[in-house]
View (cartoon, rainbow, N blue to C red):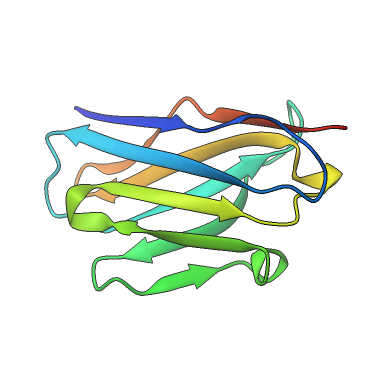
Length: 116
C-alpha cells in the first residue's frame, strides 16, 4: 500500500503565494514520477499541472508555466508545488500522485481557496 498525503492548502488572497507539500510513504517499488493535478469543481476532470520524474526532470502544463513551480526530492518521495501571483481561477482541490510499479496512487487532496 502507498499512502499519499498533501498539505498546505487554505485561504489565500489574490496575488499572494502558497506552497503545497506532498509526501508518499509505504511500499514504494520501482518509482516512476510524482506530480500534481487539480480539480476546480466537483464533477470536473482533474487537470494535470506538473510532474517530477526519477531523473529530477520537471514537466509543466502550459497554463502552469510562469506562476507554478514543482520541486522536491523524489527519492525522499516529498515534493512541493509553489504557486505565485495566485488568481481566483486557482481555487481548486489539488491532488498529488505517485507512480510506482503498482500503478498510480493519489492523495485525498488539499483545498485552495482564493479570496480577498
